[in-house]
Length: 431
Image (cartoon, rainbow, N blue to C red; front, side, top):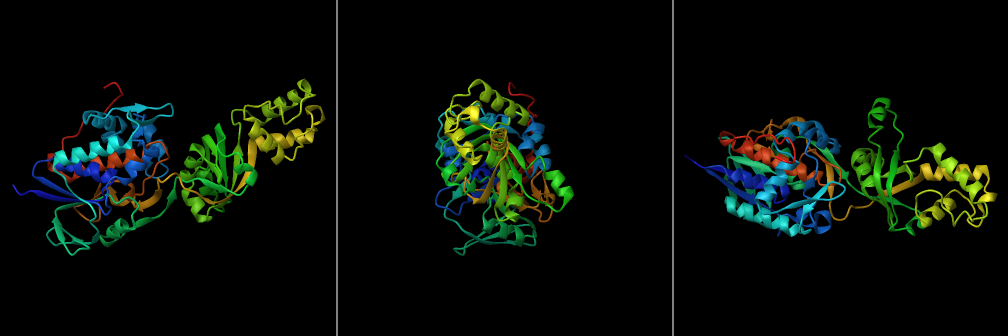
């Protein structure tokens, strides 16, 4: 029987995982092409060098809620290969994962090299031919349902099936276009907010958990505004930085509002509720009680709500309340101003920052042009997709890696469909 020649373009998480599983089928030879000198670059830097492999969420219907784009398509995909399957696969490769309080899962070594070495070893064991520093110039579709992969050094590689796992690389998008695919325009996702407020910057390192952040964007389309209402407000830990605001709450909001923020050139209003656990009236009553019970104390020295004293003083200043005043001398008008800044401080977003070095985009291959049972193109037979090259992106917490593992695994099964024997669907974490 003639072997099936498979070329995988992209040596990231999705490319490696797809190559490893495709190569395990009989009569299949896999060549993995990576443009850089070192593969798995994003895996190495993920999670501050610890690699946030996945998230401890083993129910597909809940897992998909963490994807601003792609959730509907991933629902069926996660029923084939989900987070528990990832945990089991790495465990079988000798890598144990641990779960942190927020659900993120890391190798017990707290070292991304553990994940890199496991993937590299598994690829070598499966017989994957890894080639670094290889630039693909173009792909030509041949008449006998084969692909001619033309490298920039002039070399040609013929293959029967092609897996595109190029992330947000423009070269990958160019290849997809050349083979008939259209793209949802790629724009950044998962980023921090630049806030021009020097007094806020002085609080760099102060965090509040939880806080609620809400994007205030005018929208002339009432239907779009209604559908986006819940997505443009997110809660979680909020971190003040020397350039503005970061932390899970901001990162989640940047993901859900990626296109809205791009459309307004990252110039928008943001409302922050510093104590979302309390309703506005409850905050007011707490402040009035402080006025009654602690009349002789300076307002700057006594904070009756659960935030740091430094943040309290900053918010008093933002509310235009004199710090040297005693609680007895605080007017009802000043009380209301404090309530307003505690529950809905407004800030002008003046651009986006970066989330460490982990660049994520939304946009990519249109999902309606891909068969999610196999990850094969509906436009070009023999072409498969995995990872961030697709119009799929998740919030921070291991979700982007999970979609990479899942789509890559399914693509490998599609590539070797004649040998496909599906795994039993995991029911719970104890199986």
